[in-house]
Image (cartoon, rainbow, N blue to C red):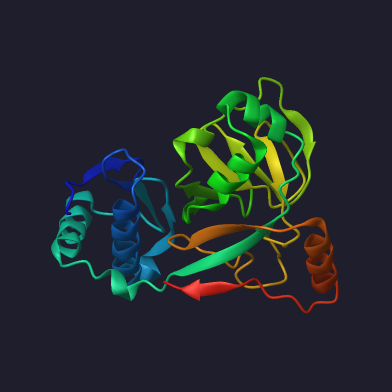
Length: 237
């Protein structure tokens, strides 16, 4: 499906390209394909290109000619989008579902603990972009049955690796941080590492699949990570 694009002239150096305001896999893949084409043409002229849920933000090094840039973007966008040019992966994230807010989510959703775990690990979640803090994934695909409002009083410290639900979203805290999401589990996997390039293995357009593990498996993976002989599993999609 082709959408009508709109544009926001933020400043003489920044332009936003916008799709309809919805969270959509098709929109994300179109944004990624267009981003790839834009970078191939204006690589030397751009500081950065950032993805949001439905907007692509271009930060030029110098003032740009608005009408000329938009005309080129429309031409690029009108070309057939081939999603096969996008190399995507589905990452398997092990989770120990023993979070301190599981009972709170059960009370809100009227589901049993086992049903929450099953519902949470069933989907493959689409990674749209990073935000809030380095390495924090914005994931689409949470079941409506698991929607649980954020806490009125945020926790002063949430442990790194905590898997949580906040409203209509789920995510993983890549480092210790304050936060108001409902903690339902913990992954032993290091999701943000400045020593590796890029610091996060998963990239926008990839998918995240949560897999339930027990305490013994959690400790085994933790030891493997400590001994630097653990690799996060993935499959090409």
